[in-house]
Length: 116
Image (cartoon, rainbow, N blue to C red; front, side, top):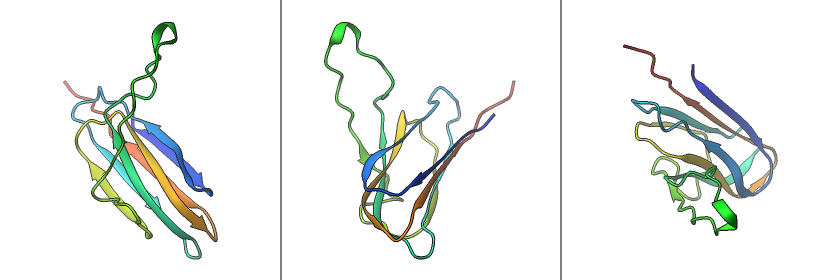
């Protein structure tokens, strides 16, 4: 089954994180940031290869998560963008620098391989 994710974002920050199922092969994910009329926003979509859900044993300091902007969603994006990736990632996040006038919608659907 597909792994859909939908988030409505109304404030600036990088707190909207989607964890991928990177064990699915072949890996595919469709990504959209929808900016409705009346919303003014500056954002980027970042990816990481560091799994944000791996707990650190015995109180050890967690490894840093390195986030890199996807080329289809560069810094200062302001309009609706739809794109896809076909390489495994651990997580994607919507990083909103500024927003006013309404929300934006962060949508992801990950394909799921069923075959022999």
